Length: 194
Image (tube, rainbow, N blue to C red; front, top):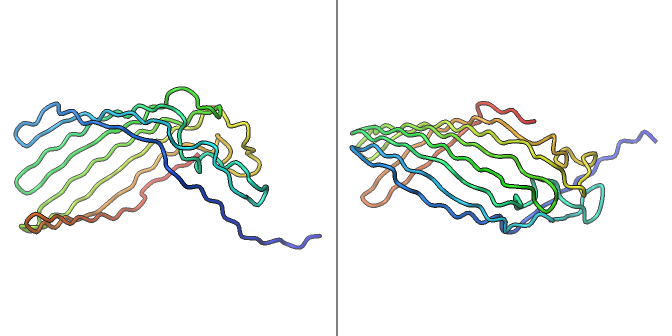
């Protein structure tokens, strides 16, 4: 009848996510310079069938970002390089999550690639300042859950997945004998979402 309708709604999911088992393997540690490998496996123990009431339906299956599991065994690989000097340090870390196969709901989340680069400088005997850049490339979902209707929510459409993100961070560290206090704050510098 032309009368606008306004309503508030909320949906939620909760529970345990996937279990990640990781190990670090040192390649070398010479003259304050080190390199180690990150190796891991993510086990799909979280749920892929979470439901909640939505404005369109009661007990509706929640879209991809609200599920707690990838539903696949995922390999976690990466490496971390760091170098320390008298009053400064810097490092870089690359981490990747490789998805395997298709889950029981007929889709596969995209691979994720993360790159962190940081530097820190000691400004006082017990205080240092730091800066960090983090880039993330998240791949698109392949396949589709047949229970999800892309017309009901943009997040139920696999074509609306995947992103490129760059964040910048500034931080500080304070050291008091055996106690270390650190804080970091960041802002998005670049975001592109499919």
